[in-house]
Image 1 (spheres, rainbow, N blue to C red):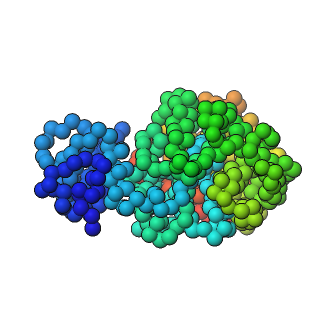
Image 2: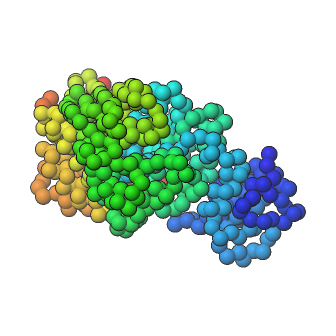
Length: 480
C-alpha cells in the first residue's frame, strides 16, 4: 500500500488532505478504473481521456492527472506540464523502481525485431538467465494475469510487467521498441543496458508521413542508454550506416565489412541452415543454425553482439544460437500429410517479402506461389510495391485480406493490384477461401509462401478480432 504523496513524488505537490490517501492502481484507461485508482487523462489520436474524467470519478478514482487546461477546479484534478513524464515517474514510484532491478535490452527496426529478440532470449537462457520478452508475440513466457496487444505496451502495462519480472527474479527484459512507442513517448523514463537496430524500410508512413521522420523516431532509442550501456547496429543498410555516423559511440555489426566491430567470415547459406564465424576483437564465435537466409544471419549476429555486450561467454552464445532452431511464424515450414512445401511468414512490408523470396529462390529449386495481403488503415504507399515484389518472384499469387480493420477489403485490394503488371494473380475478399484455393492448386514441384499472419490467430475486421489461423486452415485442408 502506498500513499498518493509518495506516488506523486517528483510529479506534483498535492494538498495535505489528499496526500495520505492510499493508491491501489494507475491507469490511462477509464474502463480499468477501480476504487482507489489514479486516472491519467491522456489526449490520444482517437480518444481524449479528459472526456472520461467524470466516469473515472464515478468508478472510484481518487485523483486525475492531466496536461490539458482544467475547466473543473476540483482539488482532485492535477495539471502537469508533461503527462508522459508524470505517468513514468508515478509508475516508477508506485512499483518501487522495477526498471532499476533488471537488465533492459531494447531492439528497434522495421524487420527482424522478433527474430532477433527470440534468438537473444535463447542465448541468455543457455547462460541460465531468466528472461522475459515483450513484443509482437505478446509476452514470452505467457503470463496469465498480464497481457498486451501492442508491440511495445503503454507505460502502465510496461511497469506492471517489469514489476512482475522483478518480483519473480527475472534477470533480463527484452523489449521490441516500435517507432509508434518512441513517437508517443510510451517508454519515457526507461533506460537500457543495450539498445539495438536491425534495419529500416518502407512501413508506417500512414503515421510518420515520410521515411526520414520514421527514421528520426527510431533514432530516439539511442538516447535512452544507461550511463554504462552500449548500442549495436547492423550497418549493412543505409539507415544503419546513418545511425553509426550520427551516433559514433554505437558498435557496428556487419555480415561482411571488416571495419565493423563484429563481422562475419566463412559464411555458408543453404537450405540446411547457416554456418559462419563472427569475428570481434580477435575472438571468434562459431555460428551453426537451422534458420535459413542472409536476413537470419543478420538477426543472429545482432543477437550475438548484444549478448557479448552483456558479457555472455562465447560458448553460451554458440549454444543459444544452435538451440533456436525455428522461429514460430517466421520463415517457418509447415508440415503436412502430403509433404507439400508451405512456408508461413509474418512479413508485411515489401522489404520483408524481398528477403524471404530471394532466400526461397536461392535455396529451393521450386516454382514459387505467394498468398499475401495489405492491412487496412495502414501505409497505402507500400501496397503496390508489395505486388511488384511478389510478382517478380512468383509464378502465381493470391491476394487476400490481412486485418482489413475499418477499411473496405476491395479498396485495399485495388490499391495492391496497381502494382501488378500482368494477370498472374487471383483476388479474394475472404482469406480462408483464398488459402483453400491456393492449397488445392499447389503441386509437388511448387512452394507456397503465405505472408502476413505468421502465427497470428485473428482477423481484425471493423474493430472486432475474429479467430482465424492460416495454420489451422492448412491442417484442415490436408486432413480431408
